[in-house]
Length: 292
Length: 267
Ligand SMILES: Nc1ncnc2c1ncn2[C@@H]1O[C@H](COP(=O)(O)OP(=O)(O)OP(=O)(O)O)[C@@H](O)[C@H]1O
Ligand SMILES: [Mg+2]
Image 1: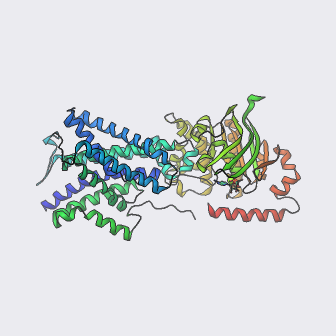
Image 2: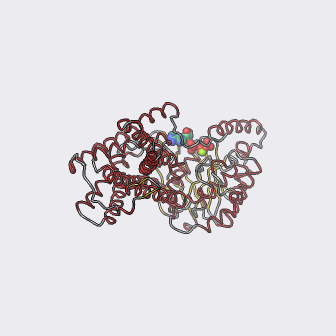
Image 3: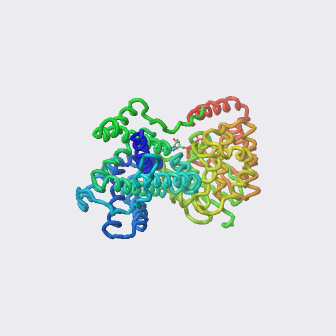
C-alpha cells in the first residue's frame, strides 16, 4: 500500500510536468495547426539555459529561474519570427519538416556546447519542501513539480479564460478568417503561442533536469513523450493535454514500479499505438459542434 | 465636398491568384453617415468588393491591381487587414462566422482587438442595448445559438470595434422574414443613433433599399446602375430582376429560391 501511494504521488507529479509541456504543444497546434517536432529540444534548451545561469554564472536561484523564463519566452518568439513566419501559407508538410530540421539543429548546437554528459544543478531545493504524508515520504523535487505544474496550469487557465489576449488567441484557433476580420493580429498570436510554449517547456525541462540530471539526449527524448500525451488527450484540447499528461505519468511510474523498469520507457508508445487504433481523435478531443 | 466622403473607390480591378479577374473597373462613393447598399446576384462580385475594402482579399490570394480606394482621403488599397481595421473599417463576414467554442460575451470581446487594453464595458452595454437577445445568452457557447442570434452576435461583435465604416455582407441570408425585418430596423437605428456609416451587401433588395440612402447594382464585376435608394426601388429593371415584382416575377423569384437553398446547405 505504501509503495502504491508512493508511485501514485510520483506519477501525478511527473504527469503535471508532462501536462505543462504538452500545453505548449497543443497551443501551437491549435492556433497555427503546426505540429512541433522540436518540442523536446525546447525542453532541453530551457533546462540548459537554467544550468548556465545557475551553475555557471552562479546567479541567485530565483533570478536564474526568472531569467530562464524570460529567455525562453523570447526564444520562442524569435523562433517563430525567424523560421515559422516565412512559411505561413505553405503546405503543412513543409512546416513540419522545418520543425524536424529545427530539432536537429537545436540538438546539434546543445551537444556542441554541452556535450553528451549529464550535468547537475546546484542543490537548491530546501529540504523542508519534502512532505511526510502518513508513512510515505514525498521528495522535495516532486513537491516542486506539483507546485509548479498546478500553479502554472491555473495561471494559464485564467489567462485563456479571462484576459483579452487569451480570448484573442482562442478566437484564432476557433475561426481564423473571422479573427482576421476583427483585426486580431493573427501572426502575433502565432508568435505568442510559440513564446508561451517555449516558456512552459523550459519550466518542465528544469524540473525534469533536477530529477534525472541535465542531459541533451534524455531531455529531448522526454520531449517526444508529448506525442503519446497529446494523442491520448486529443490534439486540440488543453484540458485533454492535462489529463493525458497525468495518465501517462501514472502509467509510467506504475509500470516501472510493478512490472519492469525497461517497459517503463516504452509504455507511453504502446498506449499511443493503441489509442490511434481505437480512438484516433483522442479520449478528450473537442466535440465538434455541428449545425443541422 | 471632399470631406463628407468616407470612402471613395476609384475604378478598381481585383484579380485572384494572379489570373482570375473578378472586379473590372468598379467605382463607388460612400458619404459619411449614410447607408449605401450594394445589390447583385450570386457571383456578381459583391463580397469581393467588401474584401477589397477591408484588406481581407490578401489572405485569399486576391489583389487590387488597378485603381484606388481612399478612406477619409487616405489610400488604403492592398493594406493589411490589421492596419485597415485599426483605421475603423470592419467587415462583418457573410454566413455568420461566429467563434463556436467561445461564449457569446467572449465573441463580443474579440471585437475589441483593434483597441486592446482599452475599457470595453460601455460597448458591451451598447451591444446588449441594441441586441437584448444576446444578453440572455451571454454565457452560452456561440456554437449553440440560433441563426438569428448569431447574426445579431456577429453584428454586435463588429460594433464592439467602434467602427467608422461597417461593411455588412448579406445579414438577412437564411433568416425568417420577421427576423429580417428586426435586423434591418436595428441596422437603421445603429446608423441614426450612433452615426455609423454602413455599406450593406444584400440579395434582399427590397429590404435593403428601404433603409439605404443610396444604392449600387453590380453585375459580372461591374457597376451597372446607381442612384438614390428611392429611385432604385421605382426602377423597372431593378423591380424585374431584384424585387421580383414585375410580370415575370414568379419565375425570377423561383430561381432565387433555388440558389438560396443550395447555398444554405454549404454554410
Ligand atoms: N478566392 C477566390 N479565388 C478565385 N475566385 C474567387 C475567389 N473568391 C471569389 N471568386 C470568384 O469571384 C466571383 C465573385 O465572387 P463574390 O464572392 O465576390 O460574389 P458575390 O457577389 O459576393 O456572390 P454571392 O451573392 O454568392 O455571395 C465568383 O465568380 C467567384 O467564383
Ligand atoms: Mg458574397
